Length: 112
Picture: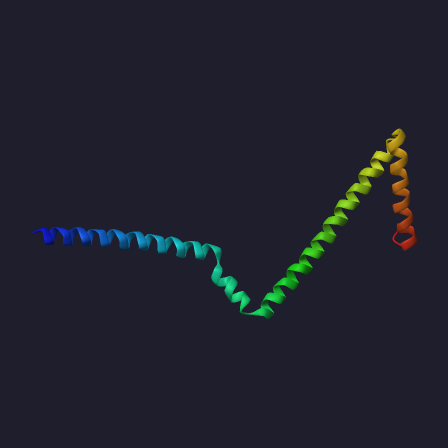
């Protein structure tokens, strides 16, 4: 009878151990799926696709930076013109000089 009890306990322990292992493997599989390791490995196996994607992302970053800086610089120039129109003693002269330089560059390049 003790052999039967120890066999049942051993079977229950094995079942619990298998359940724990199954949970751990499921957790690892879910984590790997979230990190998209398979997609990354597939990308590394196709270097032309990797180069093409990096080229496109570099071009789009460059265009985005150029457009963003243009909008930012234009906004700053307009704000400086407005502040220059207020005739503030020291700041106004400095801003007026900056605006004159920008307008001179635009006239010289034929944009203005």
